[in-house]
Length: 465
Image (cartoon, rainbow, N blue to C red; front, side, top):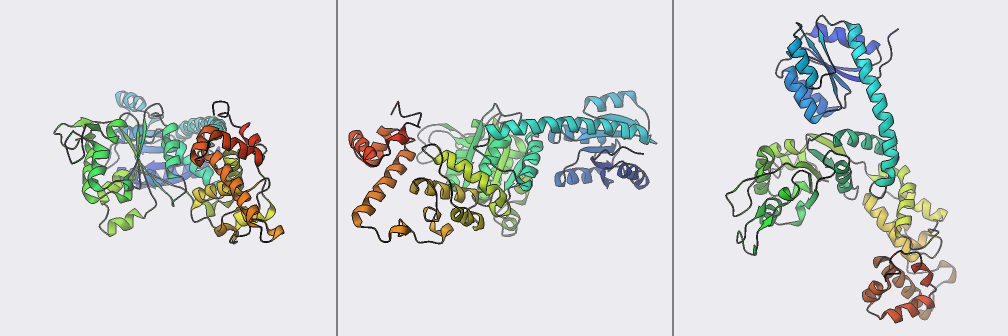
């Protein structure tokens, strides 16, 4: 009985009979199998689907086996390759193994030897996944403040990002506003071989066309009005590391052409200069727009699109992973609460959060929790949530007491305003007093009056306040 390998294997051979024969053996061994006959198909399929191994003829049409090995080593180092040849050549076999091939088999291929080679691949993957699981447990603590999620869709995303991070290929990150595209980009960089090098982010929607080019490529003194001194661009600043282009769909067409040249040739030419500067940068880009529609509308270059989208990561919206909401709420409660224990949510508040669609995604949930922490004393109830979530107008600060006297309402407002100032100042009295426009002594009196002074004892910055 064949062992159940559980691998995803791509079989590439120009001979259809050989493809089907090997594919049948692998299917019986418990593999998921894809069959292709051309080198170009190998590239396209690997970009579309995650595979564990490639069984490939060295004389594959439209792409030699050696060129495919080089491409795999560069962009897909986690995909193993078993090469097949019609004749035994020791020199070619040695070269193939040096280039990263798991094995080199002579046709007609002994299927027992092929399965043995793939068993080694399966064993390596089992070990790597065990290590990755342990690493994710550690990473969840290290990177927990950045990305929180245990839903099936997020676990799939984390697994895919783990594989992508080790590549040097450009990644297009897609997701609605507020899903955390920059956080994903930072996570990819932190797990990549470039982690010790710079991570540079630029919001492409924040600059007009001329200034965007200067921001990306740098400029000489006097290159344009206001250029009073020489400045290196973001590409040069990210040399050896990662450059994250946020809102990439907003880049004007003229700047797109210059960006494409940089990506093709690996050199930048600062504005006002004739000198080219070579840069080694991995490009991560993000957008919430449909770039294919932008191409149809004549607003985005198709050739640039394919340069940016070698790999793609899609972040699910919060409404499609509502099971992560409790984890996110607890995470934000710990971040925004000034005291221990953190406030608890009433059932009404939980029901409102879990039934809300969150069009603003995780960012909107974050702001909702911050809003509630500022307004609540101990338990967070429906009235403390933003009105679009609770469905209430919040004119009444306390349902149980009816319309409050003006003096009580002013006292309640002052208390919540003090808490907000303390939060913005991270518990530092001097900074909070400056924000409020009062003296530190006056602030201390108000804190004592509202019984808020104990909050400061929980802040590490209080002693330096």
